[in-house]
Image 1: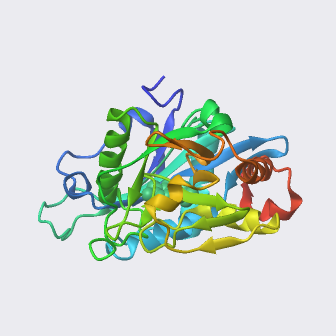
Image 2: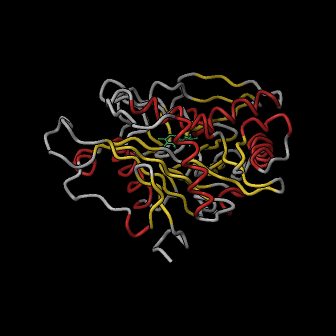
Length: 308
Ligand SMILES: Cc1ncc(COP(=O)(O)O)c(C=O)c1O
């Protein structure tokens, strides 16, 4: 048994499956000091047709893209990482799990420039249920606008899922928890709605779905999935700047993310959203999403990559 991670035995590290307890790095590793790593969060779902990783290729493409601005050369091909993901899931005998690939500058020197620090590459898998809870999926969560502003795209490549960038998310999360809310929503520097600490955001008004552009938000794989599902269900999806005020008067709000899946928001800063419960459009998208990840929708099977 491993604290907080369940009963998991193996981690893939730099090309080998090793024992969980042996997956260690030096305290002077560059990534620890400067947040110089890139990572992914992926889910493997257990379905009646077997275990499938949801949009693994798309997640790994994003991993390799995230690495570009940070000049992190991942010393494996996308296909090698993909095989390593499957090997790790199988080695841990997991039917469903969360998957965390990470590549970061390791131990050599501690100049801010990574110099000759090697790029370490790790894949961990562990069991993980609903991130914000089953109750949240059904009844929605309570959010607050964070006083922390989303990282400005002139400061960091917002579209990269880099470890150091999550300090911003962590602060927003503290804000929410300390004020007694489930999750934060961050605005960008111009006051437009950006995203959650680990989720993209959507609003629904008069049956039309709106979501912010990717100027100040991560290109979420679940966001992309929700847009495709919504459009296939016949909804119009508009990508545009959204203000804080608009969010408060929306008929429905929902968040998307690998961890959060499709989670309704029922209240923001004491303002009840719509009827104060999961709205019909959110429910339709959520229902379809869960059917898709449960391998019940033939048309979306190309999003599911089997663990063989
Ligand atoms: C800041 C941020 N926004 C959005 C998302 C949602 O992205 P995805 O749906 O790919 O998990 C995540 C999670 O990875 C995130 O960390």
